[in-house]
Image (tube, rainbow, N blue to C red):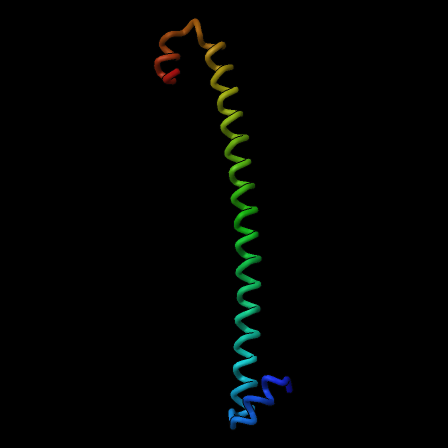
Length: 83
């Protein structure tokens, strides 16, 4: 029993209520910790997604450049591909 508990008990605050409140506070702290971990995981996942999108965009730019070089003598293909 903490000094705070002793003071509340002295004012007739039931010990069972103190135990229940402490349990709810522990649950709240655990939930807050879990939420922070989930937020960190979401941020990491977002960074990974952004990196993957950047890699894809680079690959597509390089592919476009190669395709333009390969089909430069074929205006019909250039038009059809929108290059």
